[in-house]
Image 1 (cartoon, rainbow, N blue to C red):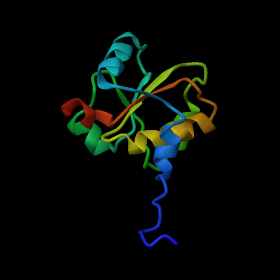
Image 2 (image 1 turned 120 degrees about the horizontal axis):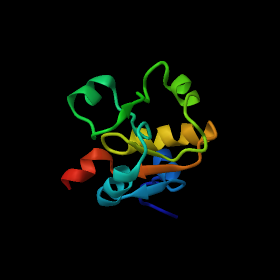
Image 3 (image 1 turned 135 degrees about the vertical axis):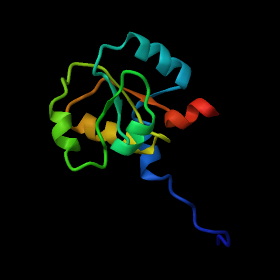
Length: 117
């Protein structure tokens, strides 16, 4: 008999994250320095993007009404670098991108918050 609290399942976004190529800020910077224009994707809100974003990023708001339509404009053969503030929205965005047939994804582990750690 177990008298302790029930085991806490792993949050779904962390399970999804395990399926991605997660890189540190330093590796992300190296990769984005060589990335073609339009392949660095910030999935935060327009307001967050306007306040601050990584140089060269394009904004596809994960929570926006046209996010899925924006994904349709992406070339499935191209590699994309994806980030958000903390890494949670970008994990979910990458999952949707993979479901849309975009397989070459590089995810900034911890989002832009990871730069200050």
